[in-house]
Length: 206
Image (cartoon, rainbow, N blue to C red; front, side, top):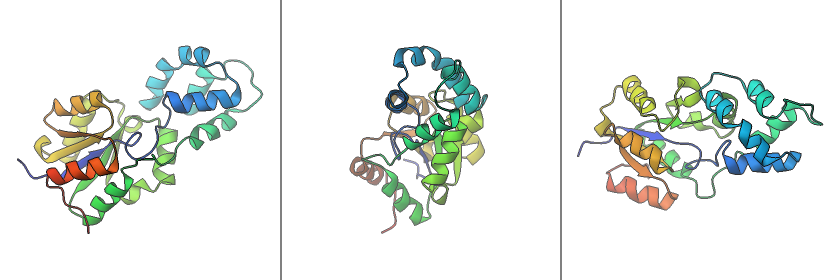
């Protein structure tokens, strides 16, 4: 078994709550009294290109919410969107911090997120203090489970897939990475992650 040199992390569902998944969307829609079904009809296509960095949050909201007059502003809506980002109850962030403190491993994200939310989450939760890079969909123009996003990470980091571990909470995303030879952990909680890291020989700071 090749020695692990690099750990790639998902963010939503591993470190933080999801940025703009259905649970977060429904909380915001209900707060503003918007119809969920009507929003969800409009959401998929602009969300895809928003997460790929091809449109701004203003353009996304114009197509999904502000196609007609509202009693609230786009800034009001976006502030409530940002407020949904919190530490995951069973967050893997303490494990990430411990592994980062060892100084042994190169670490980066491979995550799907729109730029405005991604930038906020990185800054607000101090993720750049522990991670060396961010292969976020909004920066690279690709979304998981497209395996090309993992191929890009391997190419930029100049890593053999056999020395890379990817942590994600969704089996489909893990399967895409595994198709390239990357070892994957489907995240459940911090204890499970620590045990699986230990089984792979991943050392952490004491």
